[in-house]
Structure formats: structure tokens, C-alpha cells
Length: 198
Ligand SMILES: [Zn+2]
Image (cartoon, rainbow, N blue to C red; front, side, top):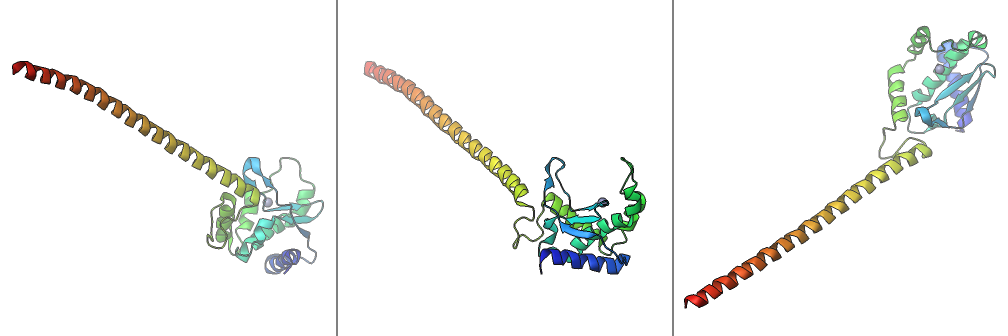
């Protein structure tokens, strides 16, 4: 199924199950950008003036249970439900009120959906065999860079430990030479003593 068709059908289905509106907002895919500063993925948005829902493509991955996408669309549909208020909303007015959160919990798989969204957000794998990482490429690269940095640090540490080892070995050898040299002189002394004793 095409992605847009999937979005449209999921929206219809969520509407049939929970809302029963005759007219629905437009639904589109977002560009999938992350607000990297806040380390957050914007899973969905509802733009009241445009009457438009946008969904992050990360939610269309095959291995995700369908209720994850359904939940995000459900959440955006709750904003659609509040559209009249949103259109006259003043800056700073709360969008996710306590009452909104109550309605949000009416979603059938609320807890499970929340859990999976958090996992996506924090990059924990749910299906390690099939998808090594469910985050987008940019975030993946960041993580890989971090790992490589860590590895480089470990390598450097191992190297410096080895170097330390070398130094210690050299030092020991030196010590031994000194001792050996001392022993040597003592031996000579002993020998000479012995010689004189004879
Ligand atoms: Zn919201």
C-alpha cells in the first residue's frame, strides 16, 4: 500500500472508531525532521488554519504495530476536535490540557502506544534482528559517531597502557642490569676476596 493511502485509511479507521466526523482534515507525511536540540521527534502535528495533520515517516515502518500510527493520528484528531478553540487561541494557551490528556487515554492501546513511542524517541531497539535501529539516519549517525569516539578512547587507553607496560618492562630490565652490575662487582669482590684468601 502506498504511504499516503495508508495514512488516509488509518485516519478513516480512527475516525470510524472514535469520532464519526463527516469532514476530515487533510493528512500528509512530514519531512521527518527532528528537533535535534530538544532531542525530540515530532510524531505528528495538527495545523488548525490549514486544517492539516502531518505525520512523521518514522511511524510508517513495517515492524511497528499499527496502533502506534493510529494513536498519533488519534492524538492529532483530538486537536481537530478542538479546532474552533485552536483558531481563536491566544499565545501561551495550553493545548494539552488535563481534559485533553483524559480524552487521549480513551485510546484503546494507549499504554502500549506510549511505550513504543518512547522507545522510538530514545532509540531502544524492539526488533534487533530485523532492524538494528529504528531511528532515522541522522540520529543513527550521531550514535555511531559516539560509539566510534568511545572505541577510539578505549584504543588510546589500551595503547597507553601498553606503552606503560613497555616502560615498566624497560625499567625492570634497567633495574636488573643495575642489580646485575652490582652483583657483578660484588662477585668480583668475592672472587678477589677468595683469591686473597687462597
Ligand atoms: Zn498534541
